[in-house]
Length: 212
Image 1: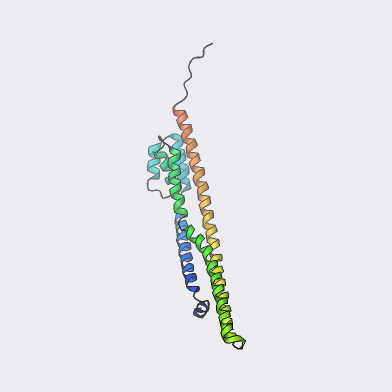
Image 2 (image 1 turned 90 degrees about the vertical axis):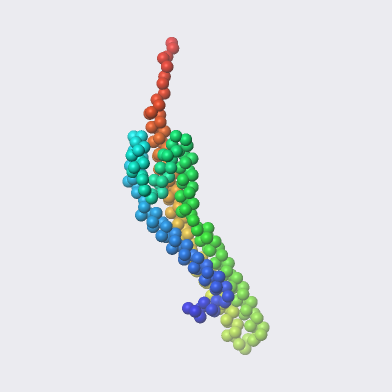
């Protein structure tokens, strides 16, 4: 393995750094989403909506105390600001949650782009080395020329391998963010509808006597 690494030339060092960055981000995001999934409590969300239908805000406060479900936190933010702007409060809370979900995704995206480019750079430097050896040693020493060719191929293969490995978790994490966003929109809309129905029921329109 060490011989393979050194045969790739100096470009292998930044590629090694890229691989460590990718591995760190993938592990961190995997742990983040695992914890987020464990903390989900869909039954509590349904219970909160039912309590909101009845207008029992005190029960909502008791039920949601200490909850780590991101959807519950967003709904509670809207409930706390229901008399001012429920929708804007939930939008602000949702933006914070989605930002947490997308953390380090730009780093992973950058590595997907940079790693193949570094591999191509290694290809160029390897070919330059091959031509230099060819000009110095000539065809009598093919081993000196093939060293540059090996450098070119190894660095390119390494850059592509890092990018390919990064694409799968990148798309997977993005799909998780998209599904979470849909959940947020669904439950936030449900809460808004419930609150509007409750507000209309609490203040019915008073009709005056008809004049014939």
